[in-house]
Length: 276
View 1 (cartoon, helix red, strand yellow):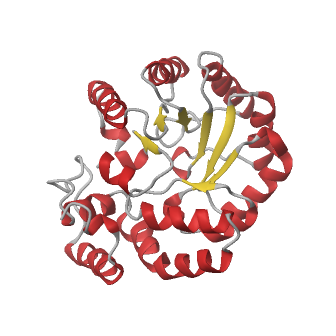
View 2: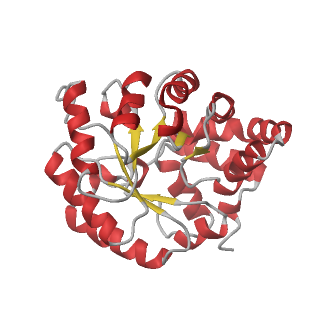
C-alpha cells in the first residue's frame, strides 16, 4: 500500500487516521504500524502521524514517539470521548499547546465532525497565531470553503497549510477559498494530486474539469462507503488481500460495493491497475 501511494505521486502520507481505523487499533498495533510504515517510507515523502487522544498525556506521548521515529508532522482532533465529553475553548488551547511544547515538528489540527467539537475559524486562527507549532488545519466540517476563507483571512502568515479533507468532495470550492492542499483517502491519490497541482500552477480550467469528472465517484465513496471504499478498491486491484474492516464495523452491502466498483471501472484509477 505504501509503495502504491508513493508511485501515485503523493506529496505525503498520513497514517493512523480515522480512515485507518485508528479507533479500532490496540496500542501495540498502533506502535507496530507506525514503526513499520516509517521504516518502509524511509524518508521518501513526509509522513504525518495522527496522535489524537482525549488524554493530553497520551497525546503528548504519542506525538513525541512519532517525532522520535521520523514523522514530519502530527495531526490531532480536539479531545473528545463518547457523545458528550468535550472541553471548552481555553482548555482546547492548553491541549494543543501542551503537545506543541514537547515536540519540534508541526501540528495539523483536524477539524472533523467525528470529534463533535465546534472549531470556529476565529478559534483556529487564534491557535495558529498563539501556538507556533500549529501550522496546518484540515477542514472537513460543514461549510468548509467559507470556514477556510475566514480562517485564512484571520490567521494570515501564521497558517502555512490550510487543507481540504473529506475525500475532497468540496476540493474546488476549498481551493477557491485558498486551500493549498488536500488530505483525502487513498482511493484516487494520483487524480487529486493532479487537480491540486493544476490549480496551484494556474491551470484551473483543467483542475475543475478533472474534479467534476471524478466527483460522482468521490461523492459515492464519502456518502455511501466511508472508510471501507479504499479497502474494497485495493483488494479489487490486488494491493491487499482482504477488504475486511475491524468489528463491529461491517462490510459494505453488496449493492453498494458493486456501485463503487462500477464507478471505478468506468474511470480506471491507478488503484485498480498498479498491482496487476
